[in-house]
Amino acid sequence: MILNIANLNKTYVGKPILKDVTFHLEDKEKAAIVGINGSGKTTLIKCILGEEEPDDGIVAISKDKKIGYLAQQHADIESGVKDFDTLSGGQKTRKRIEEILLTKPDLLILDEPTNHLDIESIQWLEKVLKHYDGAVLLVSHDRYFLDHVVTKIIDLDNGKARMYTGNYSEYAVKKKQIRDAELKAYLNQQETIAHQEAVITKLKQFNREKSIKRAESREKQLAKIERLEKPEEIDNEMRLALTPSVTSGNDVLSVKDLSKSFDDKLLFSNVSFEVKRGEHIAVIGANGTGKTTLLKILNEMEPADTGSFRLGTNVEIGYYDQEHAVLHMEKTIFDEIQDDYPNLNDTKVRNVLAAFLFRGDDVYKRIGDLSGGEQGRVSLAKLMLSNANFLILDEPTNHLDIQGREVLEDAINNYEGTVLYVSHDRYFINKTATRILELFSNRFDNYIGNYDYYLEKKEDVRKAGGTGEDQNLTSEKPRTSAVPNPELKDDQKTDWELQKEYKKNLQKLTRDLSATEQEIAKLEKRNLELDDEYMNPDIAADVGKLMELHKEHEANDARLSDLYENWETVSEQLEALKATQE
Picture (tube, one colour):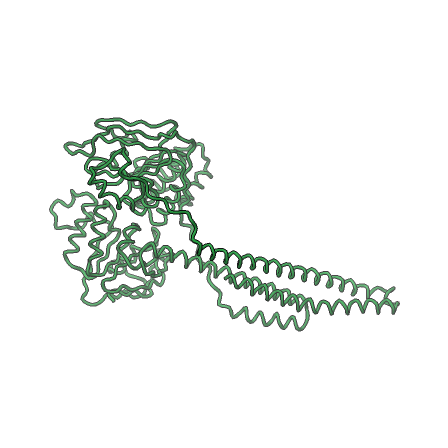
């Protein structure tokens, strides 16, 4: 074991950030810390490095072990390169990683190492880390990267940590299963408790010595139950719905012979392609190849050197700029929305901003004072309000945590318009793209499929000299057969029959219980009426009438005794039946 964390706690300004965090890391193990923005990931790393002092708990690192650390922001860190400041963000990241690896640390700690890296550099880092001889602990929102590198996930959720074995995709499935199981167990227990309390109340209402003793016995059993805590529901998920106001024509965009150079550097030349309504197209390629420039040309923010493009009928563009140039840094969040959409009243503006996690006085923060992730959420809010039918997005997942990326994925997959975007997030591309344009060797190569399909076909396409509009080289992926599996069908039938039987028994017992309660209520009411009649002076003088009333009361009491027993029996049967579904 190279690292052991036990019962670590950290509070900032009275707010608990880390709560009894416990996990360990073995020699040569590759692990990732995941969680939403603000969950304490970087704070935890700083506690491990000794840059932050925990309130209490243990941070134990094996003796004589060397640590290598890549900070999320490393522009100010000294480097052995004399022209480091002139490098791009991605070049700086790669250079710092190479320098750290030369020191051969036993434990490598990386905070968002894929930030600013293009896909080619991320793939290089994946290979380096998979073959690295030491242990690795990293923070990353890049799910595809996590799937290929780590074998353990430390999930930070509401300050608490839970370890999962496996990569990100395996963790996501297990976390949902555990969350669903915990919620189901809690709801089942609450239903059991409510049922027991109702039975106890009813037994006491019967006001019989035997019933009261049974009620007291049930109360003792109920007191022994270890109450489950309700799984915490944290309102930290964006609510994003993208809805076109009008439907565009089938031909959304036509690009003809587009070329662009900066100084002596050619980005792309004679590029031609078509975009049809409903397509979700990802533009990929190495940093500096001209992907963002292409989007700026399409948004008329940058002129092309040669060529032209044409938008189709009724096409309305919604643009997301990774540099957030569409935002006004001097405005407040509230004014940024209201000035662009004056038809929205104050309440509507606040509701929109609340959907993007800006609540209370947060709406009066200046755009320029926001983090990159917060600015991204404001840009997404404006995009949602635009009702555009053609979204052009430049690195939309940058600065979003995993939860935010999943919300955006769902919104795009449910979007009925057309999407053209630049992204380095391979997981995001896999989930949302129906077509890929790769900017490679100053040209665009076309792939009809998601990122995995691109990986499968790219060598064939490159050997063939690439393809622009021609889609013959990259034919569509074969569709999965819809023929049902006979064995699976039988299993489903058995399950259906069991459910049918369960519902039938549930309905019968519920009817029996209701009928018993109605008869009990009717007889108890009649006995009260008989008690009143005993007090009637005219009846009190009539011995024959009194005997008649007394016999009726005795008969009612006998019947009620049977009904009370039956009510308890049916109630317990109903309770046992429901337990079979837990």
